[in-house]
Amino acid sequence: MKQFFFHARSYIFRGLLAVIPLLLSVLAVKFLYEMIDKRVMSFIDNFVHVRQIPGLGILLVLVCLYFIGLVVSNVLGREVFRLIERISERIPFVKAIYQVGKQLSESLSLGEGK
Image (cartoon, rainbow, N blue to C red; front, side, top):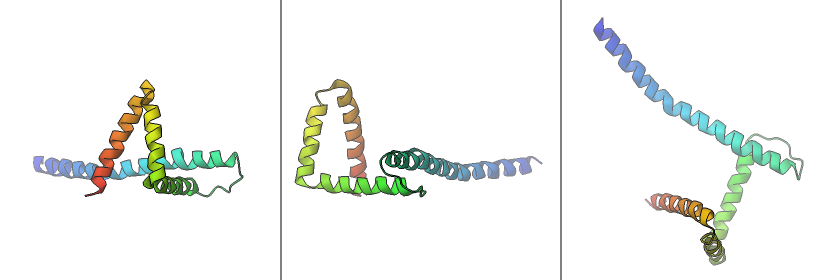
C-alpha cells in the first residue's frame, strides 16, 4: 500500500510540474491580450473607428516596434537615443529607471548573439 501511495504521489507531482508551465503560458497570453490588445485598440478607437479584430492591437504594437528598431539601427536613430540618454541622466528618478531598462536590454541583446 505504501508503494502505491509513493507511486501516486510521484506521478501527481510530475503532472503538476508539467501543468504549471502550461498554465503560466496561458495566463501570460491572456494577460498580454488584455493589457496590450484591448488597450491599444481602445486607444486607436478614440481617433479612428476600427472594427474589433482580436489580435490586431498586438500586431500593431509589433509593427511599431519593428519600425522603431529600423530607426534605432541607423546613425540618426542612435544619435536621437544618445540625446534622450543625456537628458534622462539629468533627472534623478528617470535616470535610475532608464539605467535599469538599459542594463536589461543590453543583457538581452548579449543573449541574442549566441
